[in-house]
Amino acid sequence: QVHLEQSGAEVKKSGASVTVSCRASGGTFSSYTVNWVRQAPGQGPEWIGRIIPLVGTVNYARKFQDKVTLTADKSTGTAYLELSSLRLEDTAIYYCARNLGSAIYLDVWGPGTLVTVSS
Amino acid sequence: DIQMTQSPSYLSASIGDRVTITCRASQDISNFLNWYQQKAGKAPKLLIYHASSLETGVPSRFSGRGSGTDFTFTISSLQPEDIATYYCQQYDNVTPDVTFGGGTKLDIK
Image (cartoon, rainbow over all chains, first blue to last red; front, side, top):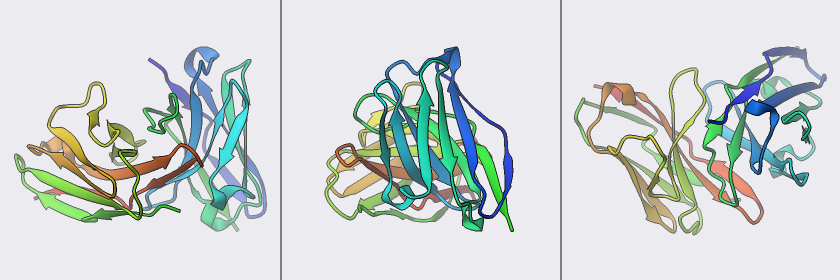
């Protein structure tokens, strides 16, 4: 059974950057895609983008193209989400989640990382 | 961008009731529609994929149907552990793009 482990909660000032990590159990991504989803307080989930670690392909939702950088380290089985120029409205729980193949249904999720942005 | 309209946003029902949630896409998405359950303080959990396929380990009281623009999610007999918020999610694997519905918060009457 695959598990995704995420880094701990972060508190950042407005304008700063933050990096959230997502490590696959066993230290390998195998052949799957890592998606990132955020959920602001009291809101529904919002897809940020995805990375296919084995080939390095990255896709971003249009809204996040200038906000987010997705990377992955195949050797450690860890994916990273970097958020830049943080604003108060970036306060949210950030999840990594897996999908297999071309169909984007997210069958394994990390526990989430709370990022709080303060002024 | 494809918009997903989910209704109702809130639903109160009794144990044993049949519960139905609908999701409408702003354009034809074939069967590229999934359903998730999210309990308080937890990550979403996949219940249904490809509009009607039950994820492994999910109880058979959960079901989904539909194609094109109109989809439904049904709990055949509501159980206390089903209290949660439910989300539909569409995807386009060509762009790619993913959109979630606004959610349905389900409560026990």
